[in-house]
Amino acid sequence: MELSIKHISKRYRGDIWGLHDFNLDIGPGVLGLLGPNGAGKSTLMGIIATITHPTEGQVLWNGEDIAKGPDSLRATLGYLPQDFGVYPHLSALEFLDYMAALKGIPAQAAQQRIETLLDLVHLREACRRPISEYSGGMRQRVGIAQALLNNPQLLIVDEPTAGLDPEERMRFRNLLSDLSGERIVILSTHIVSDIEAVATDIALIKKGHLLKHALPEALLQAVEGKVWEVVVSSDALPALKQRALVGSTARRSDGVHARLIAAAPPDNGAKAVEPTLEDAYLYFITGDTAEAQ
Picture 1: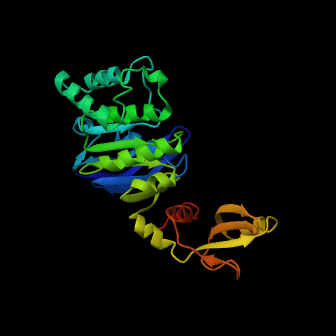
Picture 2: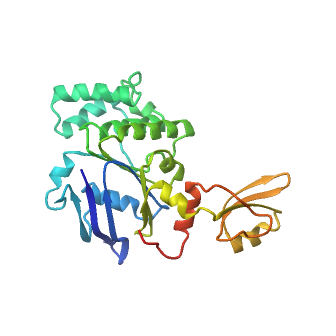
Picture 3: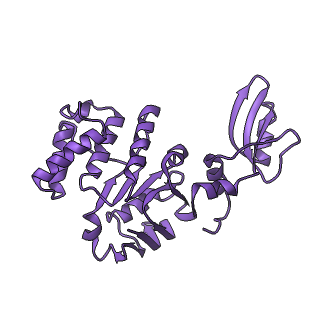
């Protein structure tokens, strides 16, 4: 099972390029596609899901060009787009039954599958209530259930936790982790903590370019020895931001505790700290040039 993205570019009107010569090979597991808003993540997801056509390049599913034979991928694809629309007056049970019919799943098999999925996404007790009464997290669980109706080998979820509260975000991340197994899951997001929780490998994207494709451990190693914590006054903080990449700050009684990334200690009081994936993300995303993959 392999998804290969070969030299994909996408040009929009006005000579605006959403993707530039994008190359990526993906195998079973959870790929975290991580980048800022507007980086090209949704464009790439749409191309993989056969909704959008690339301007250049091709996507291969198990060696076959999906542009020439999209049905082979669509039969085993599950997709939860960023803007997932539902019929609010339907219940989750009715909506999933409708989606199963659209996907051509036989009625008896659909009924059994829906029963299983309602338990999986913890919507059994609420399955007969109108979706209009659901919280944002519950609607997202309906979304992942419809994406899993055909037991897909390739599951794409685009910004699935945006707008969810911390408890719902944690529940959704755990669900994605449980779903990976012997399938390819692509999690597209700008939220580093979501990637950190579930991704087996990570692709960093910026302005339509692939910056880095690596294991989380490799990304952390890239910033080993480059992450520092210093304590400065509020007045000194602007000058510090001019000299180093400041990732986060926290105000304490003794001053501002700043976490920053720099090749060398910014001053004598700097303390080396263990890097996080957030540090690695900032290191690559804020760089002027893309590093070799």
